[in-house]
Figure 1 (tube, rainbow, N blue to C red):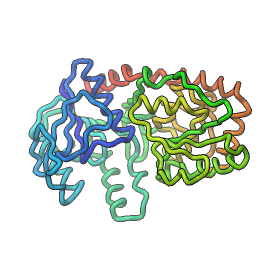
Figure 2: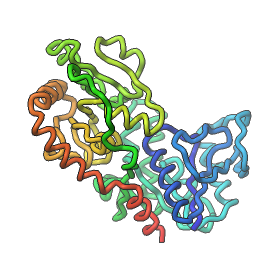
Figure 3: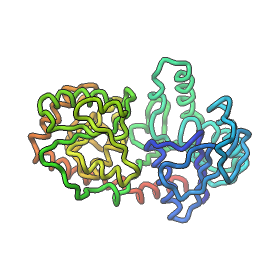
Figure 4: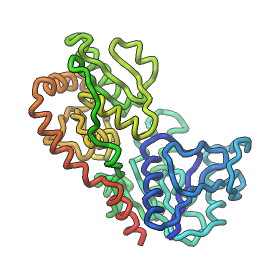
Amino acid sequence: MKIIIPIVGSFGKSGGFRVLSQLANYWIKDGHKVVFLSYINATDPYFPTEAEILYYDNKGDVLEQKDNNHPKAFLGVFQLRNALKKALNRLEADIVLANHCFTAQPVKKSSINARKFYYVQAYEPDFYYHKTIKDFIFKRISKKSYKLGLEIIVNASMYKSYNEIKTDKVIFPGLDLDIFKPLPINKDSNKIVLGTIGRLEEYKGTIYIIEAFKILRKKLGDKIELHIGFGEKHLEEIEGIKILFPDGDKELAQYYNSLNFYICAGTIQLEAIHYPIIESMACKVPVITTGYYPSNDDNSIIVPIKDSISLEKAVIAAINEPEAVELRNEIASNSIKQFDWKIISQKMINYFS
């Protein structure tokens, strides 16, 4: 079958785009044709994909080549949504997969003769929390996107009946278990290296990890370090913090394997799936977290949200209880097998069929 995945704007570096690229790659291996429909002056995919890429311009015309000199859409995302709808009207496909609230309306309103699905990878209204007109409008758009009548597939069971979202279809994000696995990396036995993916949005909880680390640094001195992946460079001004930028999945797997413990302190949608959690577990790196599937008390250390003291105590407990940590690691490793891309991609095709 032919599957079109439309994008409003540009490809990004978030886990959601990795999911789309990998789904496309595995579908192509199984003999399907996959096309990304991207804006004409968008960046290239950060996550490699074998899929064909077509482009639409401000008028909704479809082109085979990008044009970085094409004028930017004057009305921003609102103009892009209309252009995307017109572009879809000009194409043919068996399946169109909306994947963001801004692509849902163009997919729904387009006249393309195809089954129309909406893959929801998070409850987006929660991310528009700033008290600005822009966030107010975008929150309304995202809430309405779940009520358009598209066939919704969610990426975690928690979203099956979550606010405006109602569905019985669940597809987890997948994981390449040939890349994310334990690797032979020499570690300094005199060092305890903590890690986190360090975006500073409030709901990521990075600030609580940093506060906990400052307490640990006072207690343990330079024996302990915090290595933040993709963090803000200014955080290196804090003693003991290093910022790293792994390039691609292989380097990311090496980053996880270099850690003694991975910490995730997110504050919202805690039953969802968070890539660093499953990647760390696949690498057999002990996880300390506020939640996220498949974390539980058997395979990780669970702490309350917005609680730096609990994070600090959890690290100390993990250091002092290596046998318990190893047991959790083994259980976590078994929890990860369900995320194999071969299983995930085929399940989505079954829904399409």
